[in-house]
Length: 454
Image (cartoon, rainbow, N blue to C red; front, side, top):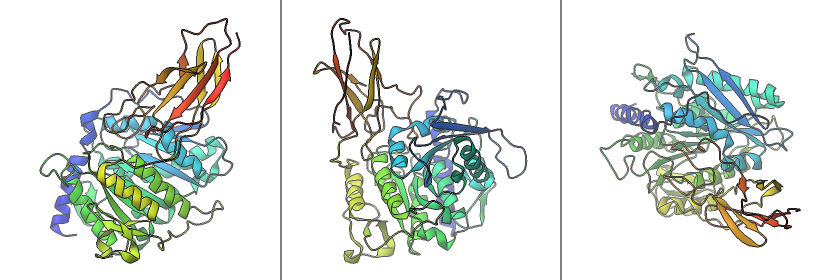
């Protein structure tokens, strides 16, 4: 690696790995959402043995209730800093990410590394420092707990933010044959085996990594349009990583969020469809079979810093300097995202189910829309709207969501329940209730209804 690469990498590490300490949550590590089935959890104590994980680690997994044999596991990996580590406690409960996992008979796994405030993030976000082994152990243990021993051997789909991007990218370098796709938000691993400083060393770059679809995603304020500020080293590090892989024919792209900095913004509205496309193409139909090679015959290419994508055979500039996109639908979504993050959607969300009333408390179940998530519910009584839940979702970084959203793209605690207390119901009347789901582009589901007996 050249000296400039090392400089950019270290700049990035200094800024990005400490970022989320600025946004630390107050929730202690011992406060969890309940992990009753279909959720399962294991926790490992910190180790003092050389090469093992020095921090305690929690792994929470969601298994789609209807799945008989898992085909993969989607991993949602938080970033560095105590606040981001705590945010990992709710990652497996995210309804939008669950929709992706369920579509492909996959589990959804969210680690939470117990990194103390201002401690060295490298001790977990470099997977060679024990988190690789702990992660693989958790799959075995969670497989036993959940009755899905195939968890130990199924392919992985990796999403990581900041230091989590460094971890996910590092896992691609270590286990390319296991990984269907990887989305690296504001974080990439260092390449090259020469040590960079104490505790930081680059990864050996195997040829197999070129076959893993990878998306490098970051905010424009991370060194693209704003330079010399916090996180300005993120873009140079991403640029070096992209050029190294794409120059050798890697299936890698860059998507610049034009609105954000180191937060996750609206990235999930491109990340989830992109991962959906990769999973559709790569997961074998029969559990246990190897991953299918990513098709390249329908690929589109685009300039790295945004603009118009084109079919690969019609792209006029240097293909080895262009972002690689798997198909036309993703290319169109990419063009919308890099313009203003307003990825369009014409499909309404699924209708709620199992609407029920106990006393004057109405409850229901619902799944998120794969493309646009879940923004709110409209509650109707006898044909008239009586409430919107929530009136305004909390997400300072992007589209409002029903579950609200933390800095590291996970729901806030306590988790928002699907319930409404109708304090004005007439106890002697036969009311008819309807619940309608609304996604984040404003599309409404069919109503789910129930009749309350007086």
